[in-house]
Amino acid sequence: MFSQPISVLIINDDKQDRLTIRHYLSTGNKKNYQIFEASSGKKALETLKTVRVDGVILDFHLSDMDGVEFLQQLQNHFFSSTFAVIILTEVGNESRAMQAMKNGAQDYLIQENLTRYNLQKSLYLAIERVKIRRKLEQSEQRFRGTFEQAAVGIYHINLVGEFLLFNQRFSQITGYFSEEIKQKTLEEIIFYEDLPKYQKQLERLLNHETETFTLEQRVLRGDGLIIWINVTVSVIKKKDSSPDYLLGIVEEIQERKQTEINF
Image 1: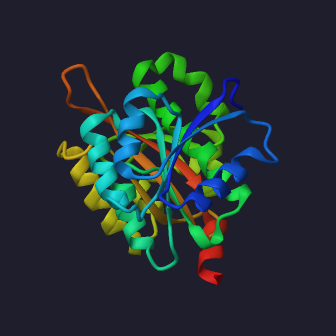
Image 2: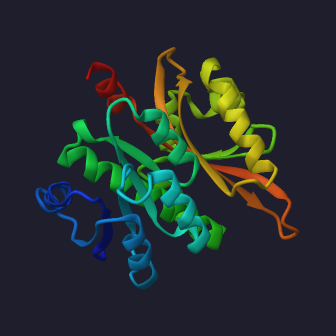
Image 3: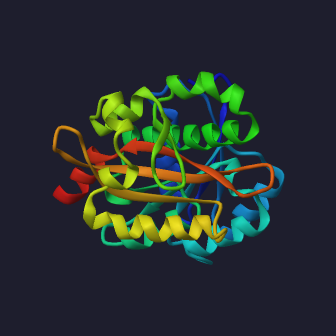
């Protein structure tokens, strides 16, 4: 739960869409939102220079730039890890949304499937993922308390994919008992069709081409089921800046994926 107001910037060039998103955030929710709006990418970048936000809800198709262009400009002006970005896109544009996630967005939602529930849930979990990553970067010791209580799965793996540490939620998502996870590598539970794209992004991460990446991929659970997850991976460095281990933050998105398939 958030004890302080959650500041959110809605970036959308359609006034009615901005009103709808504002309404979804303001109704049926115990959380207190402070909402800002921008009708273009350029105005949003100007707003972010003066306003501190926890989350951004970004329409992929803006009048002056698309979501990927905005995120690239965002990375040039701000620290990408300081707030969460949710992409809104249309049915059929999922591949573009995935490209946006590779450029720093934490999640995406399909405009036609948007509801108060899935918007609030996605925003909450995205903000929590960013906050967890920042806490870890700031202090490993302070992170410990957050680790086990987190609403998302968290793991640490070494550079060859062996599990060093994971929380209970990660065990629940993957369907493996603690001792079973310790016997496996991460790549062994990634569904084989999704393994190449994970390995490609991991190579970029270890080659210092990016600080973090986010993917939607499938994993093979311990009970044999194949489920979709959203995973954000960051490299934790030693004092000499060489890679130490990898931090993964995992959210199960099976329900959302099933909705997209059935739409």
